[in-house]
Amino acid sequence: MTNKEVIVKGIDVRYKQVDEEDYISITDMAKFYNPQDPSGVVRNWMSNKDSFEFYSLWEEIHNPNFNSVQMRIIKTEEVGYNRFTMTPKRWKEEFNAIGIIPSAGR
Image (cartoon, rainbow, N blue to C red; front, side):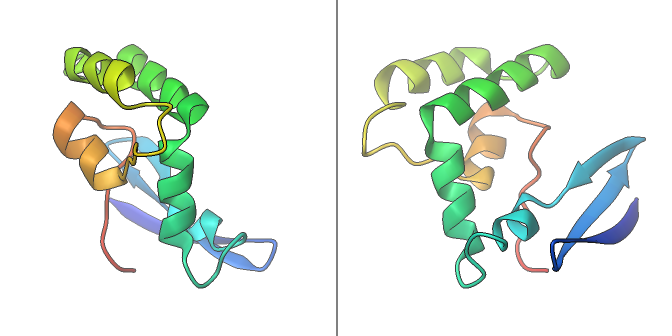
């Protein structure tokens, strides 16, 4: 695993390579919009109906072990309602996701 950093509009954005795949820190990118609470920006983005569609589709294309049955249940029962909240940790644990890797702290 290789950890690197680039500066984008004055914000240090970490990225790393895991098994020849590149991952960027969405929390670092969210600092551009809210430096005091970037995790809130990520949570709001992940809870957006259109975002949910995007990262669900990405997982279905790239992840043969993605729990699409559970995703469809959540999509039908929760997505689009104000009560719906998605976090990187929930996404990873409930859906066996690989495209978003939750990580606490820097």
